[in-house]
Image 1 (cartoon, rainbow, N blue to C red):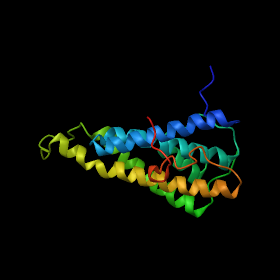
Image 2: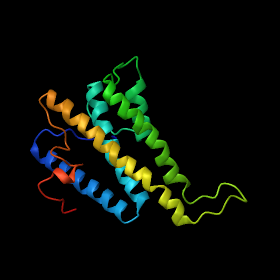
Image 3: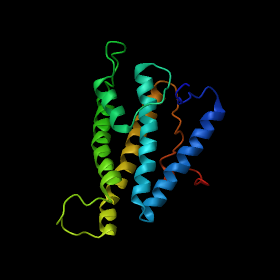
Amino acid sequence: MTEPAREKARGPELGYQRLDRYIAAYDWAERCIDTGHYLEAIAVLDSLIGDRLASRYTYIRREEPIDLPAVGELCSRLLKGFRKAENPRVETDPRFCAVIEEIQKWAKTRNSAMHQTAKILRNGAVSVAFVDILEDHRQTALDGVALVRQFDELDTAARRQAGKLPGTYPNAFFPEKRIARSWM
């Protein structure tokens, strides 16, 4: 059985489906933040960031899209390489490197939010209400929004220079610039 792959759009139909999905997912993440569902927002933002990093990774390495690992590992592969003897290409654009490093830091706070929220790690630890713990993750969600937007701006500009458009074009992560909101 072959592993699922991130299919490359070879015509407009998959591109339109992908754009619609990006818009709906991004809008859902914003709605989750607005309603205090920060962990759900973080999970959706992680998916969006992971997809965009995977696209950049396959572009840099000049490989066919494949099912790639989680965000933290993608960041590491983009910055440090993966199987360098086979394919030494890594991200060299300092603007992308800076954002990818920030995404890598965000992935650590995302891990804490997703995997530690319900745990009490020590007997006798200061008692904090669960809703207060959730509120602490609001900033992680907001940081995820900022990073997906920052990465998308760079990606859109880089692709424009190459005479191409990203799957997020136009304005999937910028509802204030869209002609209309998504219908989710």
